[in-house]
Amino acid sequence: MQDDAVVLALRAAIARADTAELRLALGSHLLQCARVADALSELEAGLRLDAANADILLAASGAAEAAGHPGKAAAYRLAAGAAASSSAPAAPSRSTAPAPAAPEPLDEEPNRGVSTREVRKNTSHLRVVASDGETEQGAPPTITFADVGGMDDVKVRLGRAFLQPLKNPEMYRKYGKNIGGGLVLYGPPGCGKTFIARAVAGEIGARFTSVGLNDVLDMWLGESERKLHEIFENARRRAPALVFLDEIDALGQRRTHLKHSAGRNVVNQLLAELDGVGGRNEGVFFLAATNHPWDLDPALRRPGRFDRLLFVPPPDLEARAEIFALKLRDRPTARVDIARLAKATHGFSGADVAAVVDAATDLAIDDSLSAGREVPLDDALLHAASKDVRPSTRPWFETARNYAIYSNEGGTYDDLLQFLRQEGLA
Image (cartoon, rainbow, N blue to C red; front, side, top):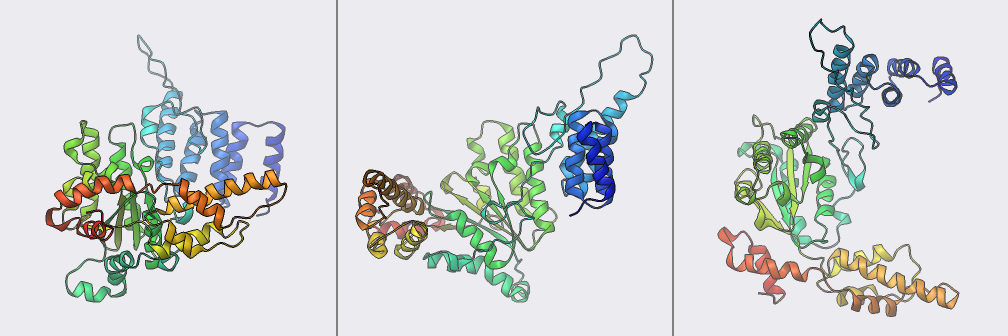
């Protein structure tokens, strides 16, 4: 966008002498022109010059609100009030307490920190993550089930849980079923649970919000619960939406294993949000992933919450072949029998398959440097690499086997037990 005369003049003045007043004038003008992001950037630059400027703090609050950052806006409003009160004439008294230090600007880059606990408490760190790590408004991912190789049984189960309610809403409402619900994906690490979650969101055309520990946990008492509530409220406003809780065992761990009340409070808040505050979870789907389903608090498994568990096994033959093809696509190759490679890597996770390709690539680079010419990846290099990579799923299955055999109350791990028997592991 081309700058107008006012913006050009102010930028020229800032180039000569950068002051908080000039940044305020520029930010305010940009805000009037609906250039919200640019306005917030200029105002925060002004705060770096004068962190206790109440006028800039108020303007930054308005810009943050317009930019969709309510937590940051609240923090700036609070800081503006503190700055205004500290600048007002103090009433005569025998002893005057020093004014509190003003908070520094809450920009996205690491800075010197916020000086007051209140500002830090009111700052939101919520990220709405779209496909491939993008952060644009939680848009639906572009990948679908067609991008997931193999795993037909998993797709069928997910389709029944998520796709059918959206395709036949009247039928579900007629039978008193809400459109939404929760399901936990579990299995060994590196087998594509997160990728499948994104494919589900893309398949149903829902906004995708990925929630990790860093989005929720906070050092201040009560902040973790507030952030969790904000995430769920965000999803409810954008229904249909899919909330993906990765490593759900960390957020929803058995409360009997938690020594401190703060951890138990987070679990309690999660349970309340899954119930839907006021029954407002219509059109919101909850998908979680964990490597340790046996560590989940039993209350999470209550009907109406995460009452369904779905085992995600290591990639089957078709899926391994597709992973090999994808990883080799942009590398120099010659005489590669992908079907043979897929058969030779039975029991490998998707991450293990990628490790085989990376190890073979290292061998090819070493040979290329020694020969003084490009040596492509071929069957010999890939099979040599596959011998050096051990399936990372084995330790997980050794642990999971005991739970599937001895702690399978109500058939919780029936699909895992069936897989173990097919593989001769049980």
